[in-house]
Length: 281
Image 1: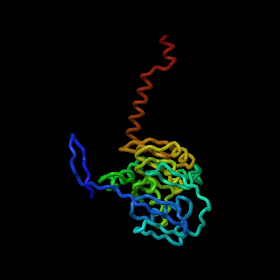
Image 2: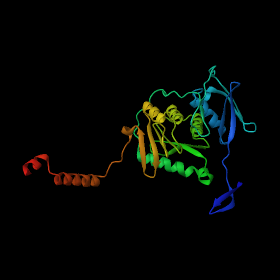
Image 3: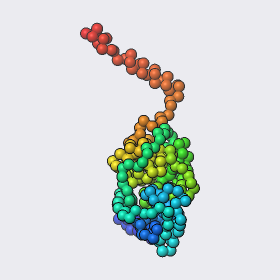
């Protein structure tokens, strides 16, 4: 814990507070320094494996010959079977603290198979995401993400100081568990940027849902990839930016359907038809 001072009503009061930690991790792949990832310090093997997976350098756990993380020196030493391209063009993205990717091509491969998405499943998954984000509740500054099945039951969860890192962590853990995430639901606490949308597409998820907004490039990527994109999911409401035709609305009970039909007939009877207007004239 740290001592900070809170200003309130013209006074400064000392208080103990938690401060989110940043951990720089230098990633060396096949003897070559590839990038420095700034992240939270837990489960760094998942972060490294997922980052390399979502950059297209590995596809399965057998593609690694070595994955070793030295936390004391902040270095991850990795050897993979695939040769790295001679020239890599890093792209600085809009991730927290500026993320990095080696490709922002809007084509993410084959489109995701059309999967119906239930609002109730989205609410259930987002509620579980909020419940697990204990560190965010304690002192803020932490993003979280979760993957769930089509009923909204949580499958994998990750948190990190960077919203893009949370997807790398999920991708890496799924790789270690040899778990296929295609056709599942992805919920995130942060904004859905182009990089986030591409990572979701590479995982094959059917839906990406956020408590905040997407960017225009993210909307375009999700439309091309066949991903349902949801923003501002709060309480029992949300906004659909892509894939509205795949949203599976809840069926109204027979009783409510009869009530709807009654009011529809009443509205029609109370409004005279055009021929009735002419006869009255």
